[in-house]
Image (cartoon, rainbow, N blue to C red):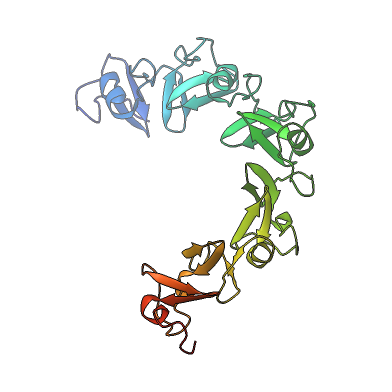
Length: 283
């Protein structure tokens, strides 16, 4: 190999000067650094031809700059991590970026068992019932006031009990007179018909279906003998301890409606004024 006389890039003589060779071609030091040297990620200086270049995924550092950005310890021949192009030793990376347990606030080390629940993370050993202290693992969890409980403890301390069967109402419940019921337990007090989703009445805090309530407690229309209830047509007329549906309150002779009209009585019959003026005619 002949001795080079000039830099391949700037064509200036390298005779008697320091130079370097790349791919059998000579380069002066400034041109070599310009063309081939990397920029240190930490100090932003050129990593010269005679300096050691530590690289990781297209990132480069001087050997003196290859240190943890947090604790400044050298990372030469030690495990490390890179976050947003910043070098960190494994201890600092774990402390800065690993998840922390929602219960004890300590780091959840990579590879250790963890529990994720409602956007937070726990050590498996910290994810326990706040009442009995037993680990809950993958068992069902109930939450109250940001505290987690196993199902038995939650039911013991917080769950409502059905007024009918006196068992816990966990799902599928309803409230009647500020008391909890299972939907399947909410029955007519007389005939035991299911009332959830149906029209019903109550008497002395007891629920009744429409038919049973009407049979037991509703007023009876003096004309049709059917119950007068709040359902259907709730308007009615009362006179001398007798009641009529508004539609049934009619003249007993001509059948004209007497609602809002003057009327007369003949024995047990209600008559309009015209028919009542001649009560002896055929009724």
